[in-house]
Amino acid sequence: MDNLPFNTAGLCAEDINRFHDTYKSLKEKLGIQFTGNIEFYLSNFELFKSYIDISLRNSYVIKQDNDNDCYILFVSAHSKHVDHKGTISDSYDCQTWALAYLKHDFGRVLIRRETLADKIKELIHPVELDFAEDKAFSDTFYVLINDHQKAVAGMDRNFRNAVMDIRDDDFVIEIIEHTLIIGNKKPISAERAVHLAEFVARLSSMC
View 1: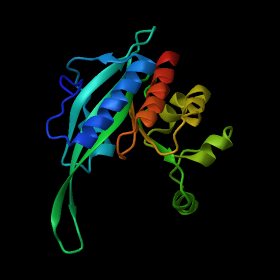
View 2: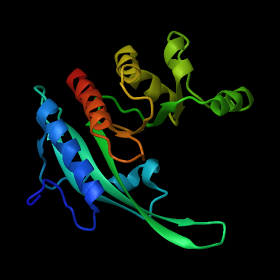
View 3: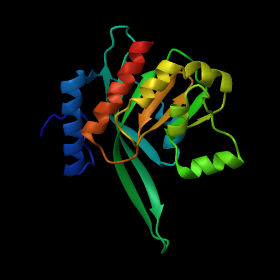
View 4: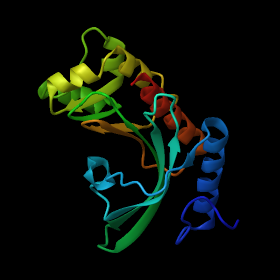
């Protein structure tokens, strides 16, 4: 497989195949195009703070009629782990993330599926943003914010409906002001990548 549409240096055959399958699915269903050199400042996101290094294998744009384009990112993440014997090992994970630029300034926001532990913690230390008028959303997602006014203004009914409609159960969203990124740290999946790409395309079309 020569001339693949992403950087393959250091990748094993399995990761190359997964990235390639994901690229082909995204190309077929959303018509992704190459972006050229764009700096997405991934190191600014808390989601990637635990990694020693996060490198972009390639990025692709999903063009929008309103010119508010959104993006798919192929990344590899380098981390170190210490086992019970104190042995240090390196790990390199290949992941797919989707990114959109939002009209509203959300401040800092983290959204993920709510767990039982979250519900218990919320009873003791109420730090989560809930929407009284949208119990279904608040019961489903754990939302952490740093600016209540900005978050409430940005997370309107259309935004919440788009999040509720994501056809994947295991994802996390982080927003820094106008920039949203969504994905997870699991191995690459073409089906999951398409779902996340459809979500950012929907958000971008609303702005």
